[in-house]
Image (cartoon, rainbow, N blue to C red; front, top):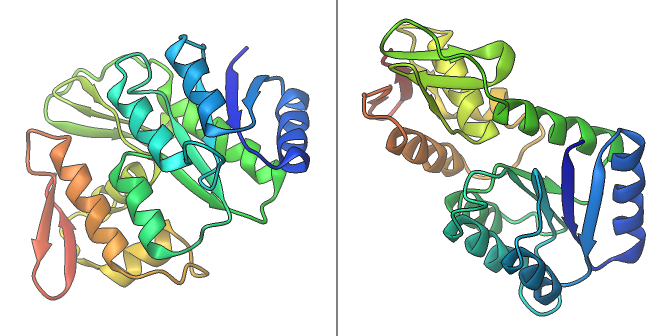
Length: 220
């Protein structure tokens, strides 16, 4: 049974999230502030996925995210930010510090569970493909390079998948934003550039070409 670690200071939200995840078959542990969460993390609290509020008493969620990514035990554990902060800067900071997903309040608890399940499916071990080069396993949300699994965030995977599904075609930043973030996303197009930059760092091979002034094209 996967364990979800919820860090949320709002009692009502914490209880609702806990109830929905338990009903979906998850084990849930929680902390009410950043300081409590830090102590649990340092003690080695087991978790398959973290859900972090950002505006927490004590240590905030972004600081907790950095702590997790600097700890070898949690470096590859998916992290979802669940917060009322919807500004572009905070979202960019979260993704630059390797958050896997970002959900703003108010939210649907049912959709939250489904997004968590998608993140966890990507972390499941899958047989490495036999072919060399870079490949995308769309059914299991996995990417490989020369048979080696490459750890991607959900947004990074969706970008890579979209580009590889359109070989030779240049996709504009706006089209990538609409397809991956949705038409109701009102942030700046630069969020695409941030994710592409992080995506490129994870591959030894060149997987994405920049078409100056237009957008991006898949290179695999």
